[in-house]
Image 1: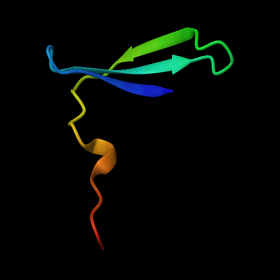
Image 2 (image 1 turned 45 degrees about the vertical axis):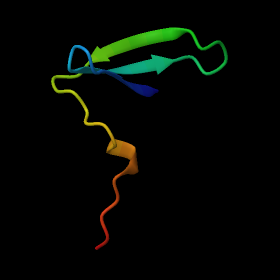
Image 3 (image 1 turned 135 degrees about the vertical axis):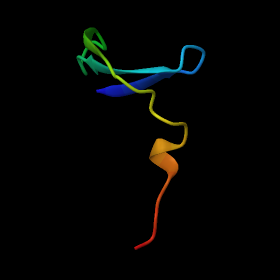
Image 4 (image 1 turned 180 degrees about the horizontal axis):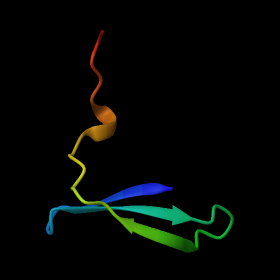
Length: 45
């Protein structure tokens, strides 16, 4: 499973892959684009 961002079109997809073959099994078009830095943003409690 991987998140894919298309900055040119301001869109994001969730892509499901077969781990053994890297074959694309499904693509889910997300209703909003995920922001850059989503995985690098941490907030201290």
